[in-house]
Image (cartoon, rainbow, N blue to C red; front, side, top):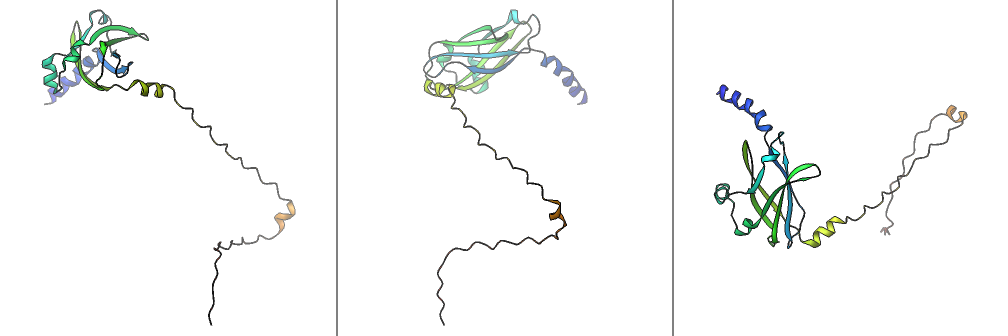
Length: 180
């Protein structure tokens, strides 16, 4: 038992250095051709040259319990660079009219293979433009600054302190009739 645990702990650093898939960023809206990017993370030197990405196989979809739809087979996958990072670009030749997309992405390189599930929603174009132009936040209310109390004359300090007088509670105006 301990040997198995020790072997697993020794293998973790090796797994951490393998290529991986990061978050998916959707750049298109519902009713438009799909345009999305998935960041490729933890690449070792030389791994980028042999990278390839594709849609997971129908068998992988069945094993993951995800419905394979024929519309997914038209997706195109390519490896590119965006903002200096390696990414997988996903695109479709025709507009995507399904708001909920669930797919498996398979990344392969010379020394390994990775399959990861992605689920995302496509927003209508109107929603994307509303979200892109945020409303300005209201200006904060001015904070009142307390002015320091004027210094009391030295004679006031010599007077005996008076007990504070409690304010009488406010009463609602009412008419009362007194009967004898």
